[in-house]
Amino acid sequence: RVCVVGGRTGVGKTRVLHALRSRGEAVVDLEGLARHRGSAFGWVGTVEAGGGAQPSSEHFTNLLACEWRRLEARGEAKGGRGRGWVFLEDEDSHIGHVSVPKPVYAALRCAPLVVRVSLPEQARVRLLLDDYVAGHADGPAAGEWLARMEESVRKLTKRLGAARVGEVVAAMRAGDFSAVAVAMLHYYD
Image (cartoon, rainbow, N blue to C red; front, side):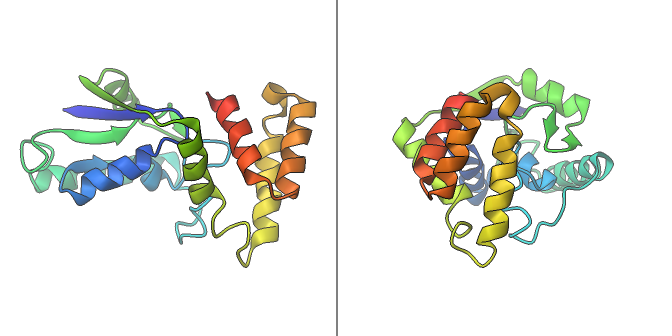
């Protein structure tokens, strides 16, 4: 049985999954397997953490199958410590450049249990800053990180408009990452 952990951008869905896993629950971290967080900024934290490039869709499917089999072998996916529930984060049909296998995507869309995580905007901004800025903006590769962040924002020009993208890039260059996070929350919401 699948339980989907959902919610808006920046509410800490992946953190919830990791907390569930640490408590012995059966968890499949799709974003971890895909080495991407699923947004225009999904690359942040994946390469730096030693994850490397995204796997191919075929390799992602194999990784996912191995993870599911591992849970079944330990009894977690069929009534073991996880009491039969497997927790997954709500995802679209693609995570970065990899495709979520159609049966898994269908399971996400038809899950018998969906838990919606909710946080106020200020807490969401703090989580986004922790996940996407801390250790990157002032790290050894800060210039490369900033260039890639700007590139990611510019990919949103069609939807945000050139003027808004210019404002976000200017805030980014000025180091006002809270303003950038708020702008991105308004975009993703």
